[in-house]
Length: 367
Length: 259
Image 1 (cartoon, rainbow over the protein chains, first blue to last red):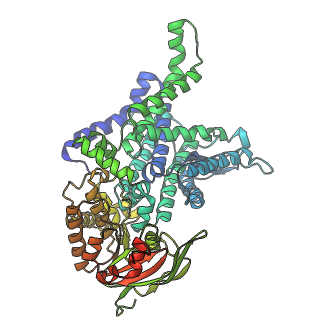
Image 2 (image 1 turned 180 degrees about the vertical axis):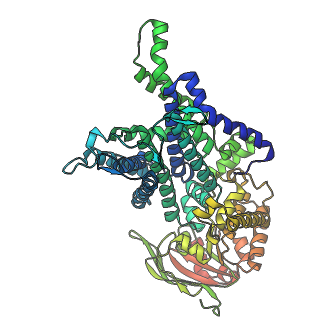
Image 3 (image 1 turned 45 degrees about the vertical axis):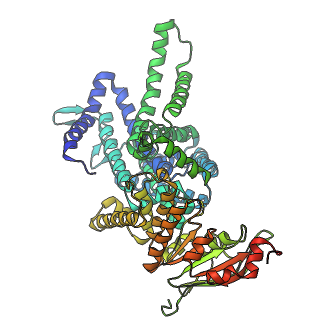
């Protein structure tokens, strides 16, 4: 990442803020919210992975959570009493990433010729297949423990250092959730870095070309098959990493965590934040993790205070507000809260609109 | 590769059917290196079908397709682009939401190497390649005469500029054969004149041109040789002036009585 000299102070302040954030959250809102911050980071990783597939390459994937599930189950099976395996984390996490990557290619390969709605349906099916598999792989041989899920998963630990317990460092007591925060932050930054590098590369341009016009992209010599598979593979890899971390962090996983709603939630983060823009997607991930939680915690007490009783169940109110927020954002900021520079450029272009409109109509009529 | 042959593209006995309709039957033609070859014919004559076969969008049902001495049976568009055939589209197909510069940079894809690891590590080779891609793309924008900022989105360019941008993007693939599908469609007289000059410059740089065109004046003034298609068959071929007075061609365009 290239930052000009004038950005350095901003960058330093941002870094310090990110490092102190868990302590600030802990002091202001309590332990539970640090945990939510951890989840936000996991979701950001997922959203960034999906952003490669949907935002860059323009392939609508509705089963993305499947790769999260693959990573999570890989971790859970290889480091829990379920199969009696306790492999080291530096084997399990890369293996989960690799496995998810393979699944990404497996899903991508048969869907290469599909576009738009058709692709969405097939990927949706794939997501469900993985979930149902996990749900039913408890008989005749019990592998995944079915709907009961896998519990007592080992925390992320390496070389005697466990993220699952509190540690004293530099004379400060650092709780487990804080440690996980730093671990996830490191992975998230890595994912951001990879996304950025890919975005501004030959590969990234090829993805965007496919998103814009697949026929033209192919005519310009882009091997659309390989380039699309690459998008699926890299997106899935991010999902696999996030899944592994999730399993270690949570200590318990069950098929319930990998439903269609989760896929849609991640897609919403991408779309709401600003498809194709890394910072927009990060923002989407943060907002869509925090706001529902805020509602979960806040809706009950607020209603109590206002009406003396709880009129609407906080859980349904949460979904209601979520739907409303989506509609409003799509009405007012159709390109997302923080759109990619291209889309922003489009919106702020001030050269004579009449000419532009005319050109646009010419362009459209030629489609 | 037969470097000695002066034929760049040879089609023999090409046939293409869509269901019961024979869009092309037994079409043969050869395009020499360095010439401007025109393809004309009434609407529905099969020009674009032939064009799509040459650029790999359609697979041929019958016949043989030889480019630069190599026979291509069933070939994907991206492989033909790599082999040196680039095209533009009748209905402009730019990457509308990418900048003019990026559009041309995409054209460099097929002649550059950087893979995922190169992109991630951004090592010296990749950085140099990126710089040369950008430099080459900017040069091409100037070459085709797009004077607006390179950061303008493709869809905000004027119609004539969009046509030129498509040509720049195609040239970025370093083609030996540049296939243009109605490049002058929708242009006014001045724009057509400019286009003609551009195409002549491109030809003089050693690139062979194949073009479909309705503008008879452009065809007459530009093409070395012309083939006429009608109902999927080649009915005439030769230098433009000759073809123009060919009775079969007049009949195809104006009906039997006129001939």
